[in-house]
Length: 180
Image (cartoon, rainbow, N blue to C red; front, side, top):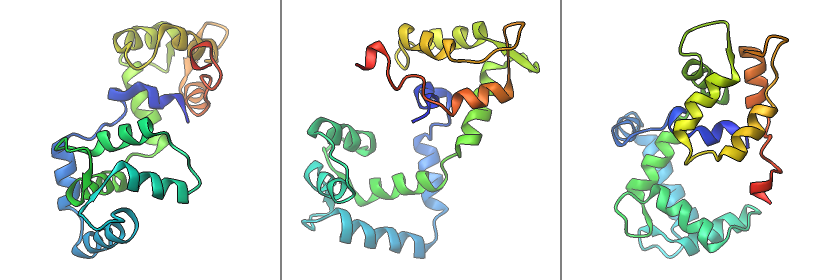
């Protein structure tokens, strides 16, 4: 995982309107393929929804071993009506958004534009800190320090797009005090 995933709201998050637009852009064939996959792979008991148990079964078949809490969090991210399960419409929205999800390069470019609000050739660690200080729920002070310590700068303490992009592709948070 790249640390760009910690920048939540800055990295292209689809709203409900975006999800509706994405679904409306699907062809009938695509919708039918997703319906078939939903029924065959995910909705094991055929009740029209995917529960945490069913999601867990699929994930274990794929070699994953998520905890019950992780499964609940996955369901909660998609479960728009709050019933604790994913119905086909919620599944379809998720799949449509995923098809339109930005690439890592696009996410990095967007993050650069946000941090580089003055449109200069370089930014500083202070630019990044200023933005991230307002997003403490996504990245702790300790983790921000780890990220900034691992950000390459030139002799003047400036960060180019190239070094920013390189840093975004690594995960300096893989082993930090707060993740141990």
